Image (tube, rainbow, N blue to C red):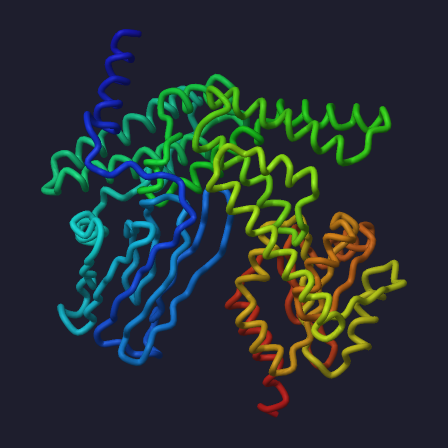
Length: 504
């Protein structure tokens, strides 16, 4: 049985790696690429008429990038790159799919909305580097071969980690064989197999309800890293490397036994009188040693990205790096990631200086003596009587909160011009210095309340996590209370409340 399994692994290696790559091997970079083109038959108010991508690095999250579309349908977008050749998901009008870009170069596309019959898929024509590959990716973008294991097996009974592992490997092995049998150029088949490999890692490391245990266990994780891999910059082609890195971090730090060890380590250091900085450094080192041991060593693409994520988390909270952190960053062997965060740190410092000069013009820090949820909301309602109020419960430590604030920025500006008052509420879990840095870049009214008060508010209004939102109309009535960011719902509810007097 062991010989059969070894033979199967050898077959998988040939299928997914191949004898010699037709795709140029990427290198780390900070040089952007350009996507430009034209939408023939462009109509500004037509549904889904936008050019957009989500800039998601393996070591940083840059958010959504949207290109301006001119009246003639032409557009141009500068796209950040972490690799010299890299796949990106794009929305170009009604078309959605992956294109491979080259750092320092441009890909030109044409989307003709006037050609074809109603109901047919619109097709993109690509020119520039790797045009042959991009045009074939467009051509096969609607095939069933893209279906993830989870889409096909979403109704199966939970299985053991070992059976789940074998089932996933077989599914993607069969997909690779299917790709080989298709009328596609060899370079496209190679790209598809890289995409399958990334998707396989993502499924294995986040099985959700497909396995019958909460902990996958170290043996399972080591098996994934050693046999399936994905720890190579070739995965940049697949547009999934950032997700692969995220899955590895989530799986490793989601091991409850290991998390308990870290918690005990932190508690032990705290009991011995060590400060929070020492505790954080110690537990971070413990996390990294555990992660790198599972990955088979300290060197690799995923290891570099995880090191970069450490600085990303700090800077995402609008907190410049300390001298100690800058020193550790300067010792990072990956020059591309090192330079990226050194420049980002300098930009943040300039931004914070700019905010100091504008202090109290766009945002207000408020204090409250309220100890009960009803009194706190009554205080806000009284202060802004006759106005529509959005209360946004967020935390400096909360990634989804920060992303929601970014995503809501455009609509928030428009609604504020119509008279919306926004109250941002955080609690003591957000460090005060970090909160003030971040709040200074968020136009609105800011409260930092006691944790006991935030817990009471959440309990009273059925809020289950961060971010959460309350909307109060002009008459002081609570008309919306929900956890999680739902932009369309928020905009619709706020506009309806603002327009209430107009309709009367």
